[in-house]
Image (tube, rainbow, N blue to C red; front, side):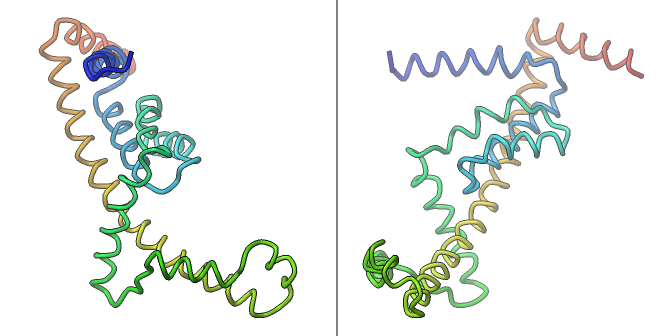
Length: 195
């Protein structure tokens, strides 16, 4: 059953038993969460799970907590996530000079110059076909630069914010909750035996 109450209950259960009780330090868990949010806001759909595992390994963060977070960006949430990123990147890059604007009509006109896949096949060797293809590639590079700059900026901001929030939440939970205190003592004993 899909209800808000049921989703919130499952989310709370996941956070308490799968995040707060992970056998790892608060820093490593929070860093994994922060990296997960950073990667979720980048236009790397299809590679996000591998990317978060790679970054978590490189930064010595917890690899497991970042994985479910990258599922935030999926085919249903691409527009609400990436359009604001594109807009922020566009505004930021326009401070450094005039950015060409690409409207839907301009994009449609660009694609109409190719006249469909059959036209490309039949006119593959003609210079005009390759000029049109190159023009489309350049326009997409302009869009992708705006998207990448905005995504990296928003992703870094969210990663830092969620690192701070999750770190403080984990430390608070582990010091104020009976199970959390036992867990912190267990981690401290483990740390002392390693030293």
